[in-house]
Length: 363
Image (cartoon, rainbow, N blue to C red):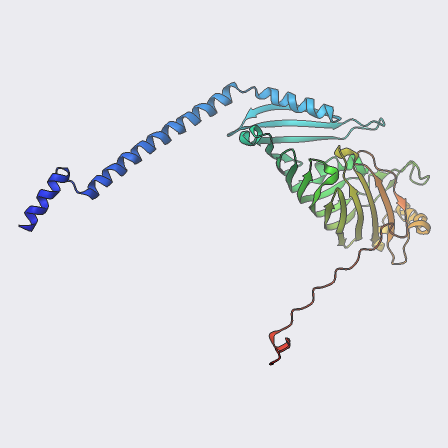
């Protein structure tokens, strides 16, 4: 009797379907509609992406890069531009050259390929957001920037850049070898580099300067006017960091030690707008092994000449280097650093153990 009544009630409610069955049917209908909407959105997205890849004038991006770089004092030639997945463009065979105002030889560099992606939503809201991934000097360069009218924040990462392929030789006049890596995390209030706060970490693995063939020339020094051959100096693993506060960067712990000698660098980097007007003020002190000094008669003569002005009481030689990224002045021998000694950081006081804490008085 109970079973017949239950079956009859079930039949009156839905022709033999329980309430649980009705909920299951509704969920299936909803899932079907959701899947249809998702499929439509996916197809629309693919159509938009394909249309963008076909219609978007990617060659204009290369022209824009070249024109913008020209206003900043650089000659840039973009070999080819291609679309990438997402909102972005890939630049290939990018050649960059400086325009020295003093008539000196321009510095040239080549970027094999660079992918630039952006955020349309951020751009539509009046801000700026983009990312760059580039193959440069045999290594990797990554840049992430997010900015609005009040503040900009950027991160840069370098991974094993081959210094032998970089334009550093043109700046120093001597061949430089090694693998350079680093990380930069910087905040720019009002988008001004002169007010930037942040930190730069630098590591150079297996660095060397000179090759025993290239000559160091300093026009203002009679001994170096015609050039002097610099022996191969192994720096070893050079590492340190630069801490920026309101545009002024303080070098901390930038040093290395190898069988050929030791080198320590201190000083400041004052950022400016534009960046190529920034000022560098460094004090470099080094000590060389006897075997390296005696490997070149002229180099040994140079150090003897520098003893009166640059030989320190601790056995190191010191010189000051000043200028801008575009033009550095001739080195100036100095026995003592022009920068005041940094205060030593006090170690935090150890916390008192529970047994050492004063016992509460009873009253």
